Length: 324
Ligand SMILES: [Zn+2]
Image (tube, rainbow, N blue to C red):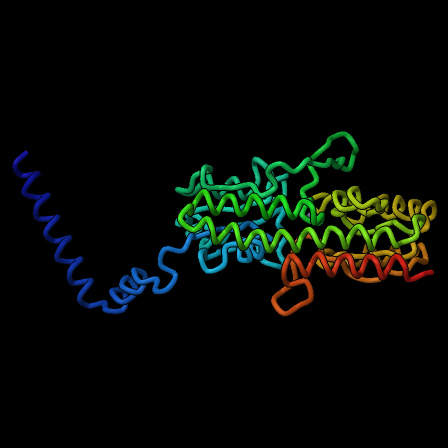
């Protein structure tokens, strides 16, 4: 017993000595530690994680300087299936709160977002689903046997209002001291979304009824199409399944022959080739690109959620009235 104790003390002293030597001979690491302890002007800001670009933008609009945002899935990467990076894990562990879309966008209960929370020190109590309260729409799997929730509710500006309200409420819950700021900022943002809804209604009502047909690659526009009365044509149900099989292409060509849409559209984030095949086989042109699973890169058209919604309605309106 006694000998063990002595050995332990010797080891402890050697360890402390080595640690001190390490500190003295490595000034770089000492500086880093000091830097990390001084977050300067952002001190006290809420550390917020967002799951994809659209939420990153919305959080920044509503949270302003009171929050620091770390976004997980960047533009150009699929939010349905994502492999978190080591930096992501670190940021999630240290965050005050997280905002995610839900409705299966981040892969659902067993998806990448659930895994990142469960594999870090983070807690579900700090994670807020911004689509809370949104009535889900369903899509069928390829074989038509299973039903699953369509995650793309954010393409509908009215859902955008709910998302903004939930984001505001999450900030107030996590940071009640700055409630007035969040309320005021969110109000302005929500007013703009209400105007956007009016614009969607007006523009779609101006399209001749028989031309209110929206053909895209993925069935991402279901919520928006249902709200404003557009008929949907698509090649595949969801990006995570097989995209552009001969059966899917034939099925869309049949839809086009039956419904005669004025033009076709293709999303910025998908492989254009299946829609190009549909276009050349049906003789109906691809009018332009629409935003779907991501906002544009900074500096591009559609680089905020509001601009993304504006861009989509403009292109849809121009396309569907171009053949008059
Ligand atoms: Zn998608």
